[in-house]
Length: 327
Ligand code: HEM
Image (cartoon, rainbow, N blue to C red; front, top):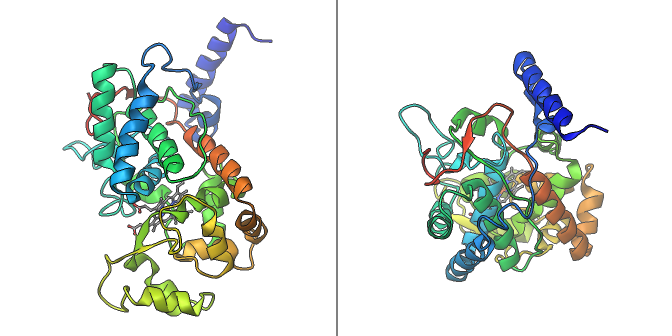
């Protein structure tokens, strides 16, 4: 058994080795920050209540905002860990993530996070990170749309920089095969099961025509009625920005309809239908399609796991006062 001080010096040794050997993938896991559901119990006991109430208002006003915040969390965590890097506006010294391919004109919810942050700052100055706010807000979004809830481990810090190229390199695209989706998630320490569960977030929210056009006009494994329906608002040319719900039966309900849609060849994106196309995830998709509780449990677990991704060792961090810029 290691004592506290020898554990600390072990950590320092690992940190130094990591820096010297430049092995970020190994260091990532070993040096992960210890998050705790009680992190703000004394310093900001009302934080969860504040986040929930602002999210409840936002989702009541526009249910899609719940979906948008869930996606914001995913896009934050997949790029150098859950560090609110996605919230940073571009500056003269760096080009951030907001204008990366997967985010530009697409990711929404920045104003809701600002509204939460303003109330949290008023209650507990310079205490709660923007990264923790996004983690809590996405948990609440899922629940407010009818999905599960869970305890969120807290104590993340915010990055002091952001990288557009890292966002472009790490976020999977809608044309991806099941193999490349699996490896994109594996690169983050997430299993194929985590990937299939997390993709169930596509039971809420919307996508633009440019991302599903080739699916509804050219792919063989698409339900004909569904393709015709979607073609109605997504012409073969033009209308790139026209929106369609991922799930047209219950577009604002966080349920397991996503998987029933996949089984019926009604997946909206190519990458969605890849999870049920005679490949390795078919069996799990079938299980989730018939077992809402299993999906809800796995989704919650996978969100906690994804939320445990932290920036690589040595990345400078802070608790930002304004989520859009460094202190
Ligand atoms: C597996 C790989 C994934 C790919 C390729 C993918 C791709 C996409 C694309 C292309 C859109 C539509 C964007 C637009 O039209 O502007 C979208 C929307 C969305 N994604 Fe994903 N996604 C993936 C995984 C995830 C995960 C893991 C989550 C959350 C846990 C998530 C949550 C969402 C949500 C909720 C929306 C709708 C957002 C809104 O309506 O504002 N996605 N995704």
